[in-house]
Length: 304
Length: 320
Image (cartoon, rainbow over all chains, first blue to last red):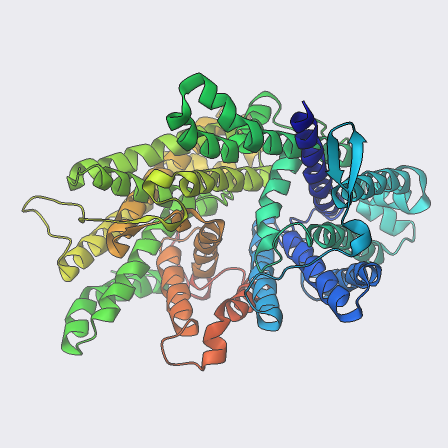
C-alpha cells in the first residue's frame, strides 16, 4: 500500500513536469498555430543553464532564477530569428524547421558542455525526506516539484482566465486579425507567449536536472511523451494538457512499477521478464490509441 | 521525344548510378559502391513517403517505423535460422503493410498536427519495443549471421550484384509510383489533398483511399528496410529512431515535394552532404565533430528560403 502511494506520487511528479512542457506547447499551438518540435530543446537549455549557474554561483536559488531568465531569453531570440516567419507556413515546414533547430541546439550544447552526462546535485536543504504517512517517507525535492507544478497550473489558469493579458491571448487564439485591428501589437503578444512557453519548458528542465540525466538530446525523450499528453488531452486546451499529463504520468509510472510483477503472477516470471518492460514502455502509446479510437478530438477539446 | 528538364536530370542520375560500380572498380574505391547503394535505399524509402506526404498531404512523422519493421522481419527470421530471402522479404513487406494498416486506421481519423504527433508517437512506441526486447539485442541490436539467400538467383554477398538489384528496384518503384500517382486512385489522393470538401461533395470518402496509400507506402518502405538491413548486415532499433523519420521527410522536401524525381535528388544531396560533413576528409575535424549543427542550419535555411526543393529549380513535365 505504501509502495502504491509512493508510485502514485512519482506518477504525479512526472505528470506535473509533463504538464509544464505540454502547457507551453499547447499554448503556442493554440494561439500561433505553430508546431514547435524544438520545445524539448528549450527544456534541455533550461536544465543546462540552471546546472551551470548553480555550479558557478554556488547558490541553487540563483541557478534557478538565472536558468529561467536564460531560457526565456533563448526562447525569445529563437522566436525573433527563426520561428516568426513560420507562423503563416503549413505544418510540414514548421516540423522540418524546428527539427533543424533541435539538431542545432543539441550540437550547440555538445560544443559548449560536451556530450557526457552532467550530474547536478541538490543543496543540503532540499535533500531530506518528509514523512507523509506512517511508513511513507517521500523525497522533499520531488514533493517540491509537485507543489511547484500545481501552483504553476493554478497561476496559468488565473492568467488565462482572469487577466487582461489572458483575455488578449484567448482573443488572439480565436481571431488574430480582429485583435490586430483593435490596435493590439499581435507580434509582440506572440513573442511574449512564446517566451512564456519557453520559460515553462525551461522550468521543467531546471527541475528535472537534479533527478534525471542532463545530456544533449534529453529534451526529445520527454517531448514525445508530451505529444502523447497533448493528443490525449486535446490540442490547444490547457485543461486537457493538465488532465493528459497527470494520466500519462501516473499510467507510465504505474506500468513500469507494477506490470512486471502482475504479469509474473499470471504467466510466470519467464514471460513477464520479456513482456513486462516491453509492454510498460508501450503503455502510454496504447492508451493514446484507445483514446483516439474513441474520441479523435482528445478528452478535453479546446473550444476555440 | 521532348523531355522536361526534370525528367532529363532524373535519367542522367540513373545512368550515373548505373556506371558507379564500374567507376568504383576502376578507381579501386569500393566505398562509393556502398555509399550510393545506401543513397538508393533511402531514395526508395523517401519515394514511398512522398506518395503519402507529397501527393496525399499526410504529414507522417513516423515513416522510419516501416524501415525498422522491414529490418526486424529479416533480422528476427535470421536469428531463428530462416534465411530464405523470398520468405524474409515477403514477411518484411507483409508486416510493414499490416503495421501501416493499424497505425493508419487510427491516425488518418485525425488530421493536421494531431496526425503528425500520432504517427511520431506510434513509431516511438515501436522504437521502445525494439530497445526493450533483450532477446533480439535490445538497444544494441544484432548482427545478421547470413544475408538473405536467393538460391542461385542472386547473391547479395556480391557487392555489385546487390547494387544492381537495388538500382533495379529503385527504377521499378519510380515507374510504379509514377503510374500510381497518375491513375484514378492517384487522382483521388491528390484531390483529397488539395480540396477535401470538394472530393466529399462529389461523393468520394477520402478515408479508404488515404488508408490504402498509407499501406502501400508502408509496404514499400518495409522492403527498403529489408534492403537496408542486408546493406549494413546489422539490425538495430536506431533504424526506427524518430530522427530517421525526420531525415526521410527532409529528403522529400529537399528534393521537391510531390515530384517523381524529388526523392532521388533529395537522397543524393542529403546523404552526400552528411557524408561530407561527418568526415570524409574534405572538411576539418571541428566541422566533423559537430556536423549536425551545420546540417540543422542548412535544414532551416532550405525550409525558410527554398520551399519547392531542388526539383522546383527545374521545369517539370505536366505531372511533375
